[in-house]
Amino acid sequence: MPTAILTGQPVPGSSIEGELRSLGFDVHLASGSDDTETLLARVPGDERVAVVDARFVGHPHALRLGLTDPRFPLAAIPGAVTARPDARQALTRAMARENSAGGGTALDVDSLADRITAALDSDGADVHRPELGSLVAVVPADPQARNEARQAVAAVDDEAVRLKSAVKARDGFVTTFFISPYSRYIARWCARRGLTPNQVTTASLITALIAAGCAATGTRGGFVAAGILLIASFVLDCTDGQLARYSLQYSTLGAWLDATFDRAKEYAYYAGLALGAARGGDDVWALALGAMVLQTCRHVVDFSFNEANHDATANTSPTAALSDKLDSVGWTVWVRRMIVLPIGERWAMIAVLTAATTPRITFYALLIGCAFAATYTTAGRVLRSLTRRATRTDRAAKALADLADSGPLAEAAAKGFGKGARRLPGFTAPAVALLGGAAVVATAALTDFGGPWPLVAAVAYVLTSALAVARPLKGALDWLVPPFFRAAEYGTVLVLAAKADVNGALPAAFGLVAAVAYHHYDTVYRIRGDAGAPPQWLVRTVGGHEGRTLVITVLAVLLTATQFKLALTVLAVAVALVVLVESIRFWVAAHKVGAPAVHDEGEPA
Image 1: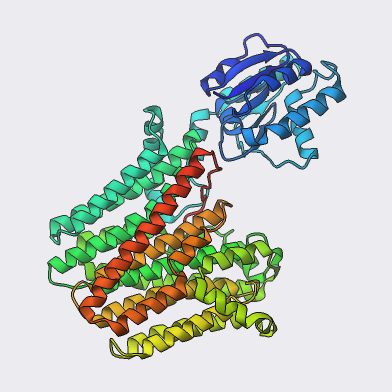
Image 2: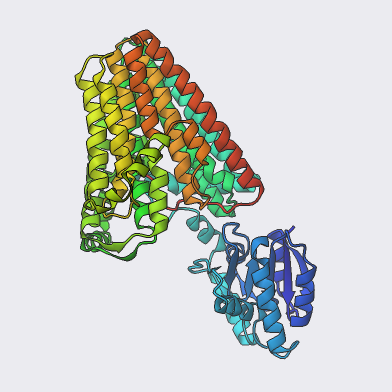
């Protein structure tokens, strides 16, 4: 149980002790700084601890935001400061310095909690200060100020603010106007019944899988039910994040489940639509796989661009300035958010088209919409990169190298290129990545299945991939290298499976790409959580992007179409088992040791 040390003389009629207990704190009273330091030393090192001024007046949700958010090692609001176990040393050091400088109760007329916070700031500690908005959090100096503070507390509806803050500050049009107005109340209903965000996330996954099953029936009733259930799944998907913000139930495991389940739900639904179409005599597996490839590549563009510019210095661009200016005009904000087809708009479109049309029409609309969105966002980011004066850091280069997912073949060849690669022009990395990837996909598409030319192109792809990563990825457009690699690998699998022209090849390819895409998403979420990329043994075991591309082309040359289908199935199962087992092991272990949660407050594309 976390501990709160209430410092100073108690104030008659104050509710602070009860409010702290309602938040789950074990409350201890300290008369002065000496007593506070003694009590602080007695708190077990594996527990959260807070120091709160006994004169504090404010909303309970202000205390909740300041003292219970698990994402931040140190946090403070006026009159209160808290530390997780991993930040206890910093808090103890600041407390000891203030005690020795102030001398017992000599400075008790000031807020000890605020002095500790100031000491932490002077030590260079990263103290999180939540945005309170209209919520009150003050330490009144006299009875009149206390009375005014209490009146200010009574004038603001704490619960209304809490409900409003449960919704993301930035969201899509559909989510903002059609989901969040009522899903926040579902989140509150869940909180009052003790449900956790992870339980709601799991319910969203189950609902989406049932929707995929309904779509797989291939009947009009099944398609209508699938559309309705997909919307219900998205409502729950919004609810889990709102529940986490409403009750501050963030966790490492929850962040991972929320991110990975979104992808699993959408791609499982694609498979369900393809199965339903097949029952009606229409083969749309190529469209389903194409939609998954396009959507995954869009995400990689987002991730790579953000990582490349996450901590860049001198990060200015007239294009970015124009974008910020457009965001200041109301109607342009919503138009720009809608045309990138974020998850709310995308799922709404899929649900409506599933219920009203056919799977083929649904996939056509999805591919056209995602292609336009991908062109719009990528072109804008290319313009920003070309006009941006920025110095990329070693951390950014490392993140892009991890996102590239280069295997042992590319690594060995990259060492051979050595210093020569450093003398090439700055655009070399994305240029050779694009040319090598386009060559292997085009060769597979333009030659007969079983011919040797795709293999020759794959060998060349290994070399171009190595050249692309032979030097640190710090160039203006080097963030394009990972998405070019994703498009090349996934596109090769798609084209060869389609060229095999045997029943079951494309579903097997869908499974393989889904397994590999999971590995790539897992890499992203580990980097976002500052946990580093997956271990090298895992990358080497699954071959890296260039190794898998080479293996696929070798199998296409050596095997018959039917045997190739079986080989794709075996590869899909093998890759899925390896990456899932390692991923689950990692995230469960991270959750158990209390690793900080990472929650994206923007809406992914």
